[in-house]
Amino acid sequence: MTRTQPVLRLENIHKRFGDAEVLKGVSLELFKGDIKVILGPSGSGKSTLLHCINFLVSFEQGRVFLREQAINPANKPELYAYRQKIGMIFQDFNLFDHLTALENVQIGLVRVKKIPKLQARERALAELARVGLAEHVSKYPAELSGGQKQRVSIARALAMDPEVMLLDEPTSALDPELIGEVHAVIRDLAAGGMTMALVTHEIGFAGTLASEILFMESGVILEQGPPDRILNHAQQERTREFCSKIARLHKRSGETA
Amino acid sequence: MDLSFYTQEVAPAMLRGLWVSIGLILPSAVFGLAIGVLAGTLRVYGRPFWKRLSEMYGLLFRGFPLLVQLYLWYFGLPQLGIYLSPFAASVLGFSLCSGAYHAEYVRGALRSIKQGQLQAARSLGFSRARAIYSILLPQAIRRALPGCGNELIYLIKYSSLAYMVTCIELTGEAKILASMFFKYLEVFFVVGAIYLALVSLASWGLNRLERYVSIPGFECVRR
Image (cartoon, rainbow over all chains, first blue to last red; front, side, top):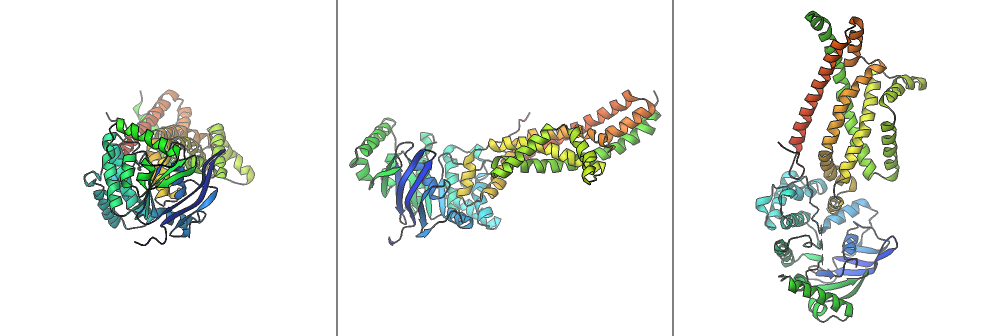
């Protein structure tokens, strides 16, 4: 695998919401197959960072590069083409409520990629089968469990053939019993070599999956490194404090990654 | 009681009026809905200029009494050199008025849909306009249907105002007939019953429609 050029690179992103500066110059590089897990307390800017990557949130300063091509969000066709290459998974799934699982996956192919409907349907069925939902393709979101909804949303993103997946707390809204099925799908993606940026509080899962962990606080990446170093031998006091607090919490609730 | 009065006089006049009324109601319903969906969408997702414009539209057309609006279209416009037929003035008045009310229902329905779906659509590469059109509106219209249906039923009845601008529809025919034979009680009772029948038919149709477009998560209450 060539590691000469990153798939995705962020350069010095600054973002404010009114008076609050949420991102104070964040830079990030994702190489092919990288899985970067972003940890950090609420309000540290993790989620905003992911939203900045595909310009769902606009920012004042900084640039985003896909394969070293700077993305210009003012150029709409270029932006829409770029967004297709960046799959995004949201905390609360954001499925289209009036469409079946199949139609949810299919609609982007038909309306955005302009793929013929029959072909789009084949692809959508394949993606749903890949996340283990072959039997639920004709159900509406209201008829699916949280874990199933999140798997539909992953299938929907995968159908667009993304080069990078952004996962924003994909299991935070799920019952503990349903977390496992979503984790399994994410592991499959990792095994398939998908490049990912994942925001999560499940540090057990993060530790076994991540190629690198980034600890964010107050809009900056405070510390980054291999999972073992960040989780067990962090340099910064704040990182150690955060990780041990979360680890204790998960031990008490008997978390299994 | 003289049955021949009903068969010879009432029935033909009512039938004539009924066709005119239906001719007023159907296009007004279609244009009104189209205007309402557009204005409601612009009100929520339009750029500031369009948002302001649709706000003004709603204020004006819900603020002026409908009869005053009709007078303006039919008796007022000729002063500016624009002459509308009674029928055209009525359809214009009804469409613009009912559109203003539909817009409120559509606006409320759009607001009730979580923003996350718009974000998800954009993250797939949808433009904002396309996401609104193909993701948000199909849901909003389902949710607005009970309110919009109510407005359609109301339209059936306020179409009777057309006769005030000399478009002789059901109520207009009745007025002429009743004063000719001085049989107000009989004639207006029949007219009332015809409106009731139209409204019942519309409610039945709207219920069927609601049921037809109903999907899990957007159910209408079934009995």
